[in-house]
Length: 223
Figure (tube, rainbow, N blue to C red):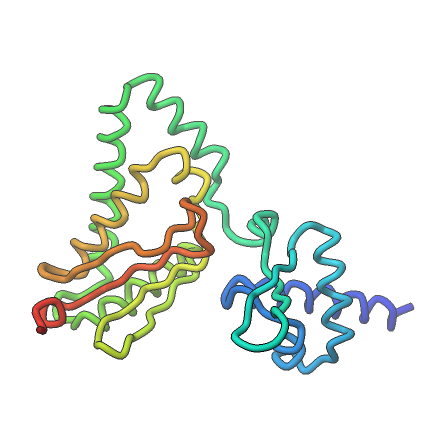
């Protein structure tokens, strides 16, 4: 009996680990997953099939230069339940109520206050003496604590990508475009004058993640 309970608990942990890995890395095939978890392909397929029955994952085909398309496993929107949601239902209700009571101008004022508070909190943790990479790494660390699963990727040309693999306020952001707009403005302020930052992938627009391209002034002016 205890052995069965132990096996069940282990399988549950494996499924959650698969969910976390797919969230972090995007679509993966069975062989890659099996290698990551040191399990057989059959064992991984069993867990994926159970997750598929629960509606948490689905499979897609990805074309390859040679041979047959690869079958990749990806998360569905139902997987969001496993990650911080930022009290989305309450947030949406409040946004709608504020707009009804005070109009667009009232909502804009609320977003200005929120942005000012976030700027103060971020500025307290990100020193003015930090270089751009240090600022980005610290910003990603703060955002990860807030539930965004953020990381910084340095590019060959000296620019950076800040990648956020989850959005805990996604539903609220979909209801209020100003949330995403203000966050982009906030990042520009925090990273410093002359730094170019552009959102090139967007979860709210249907992307798997939010990705920001960040370039220092000297890169922008390099011929």
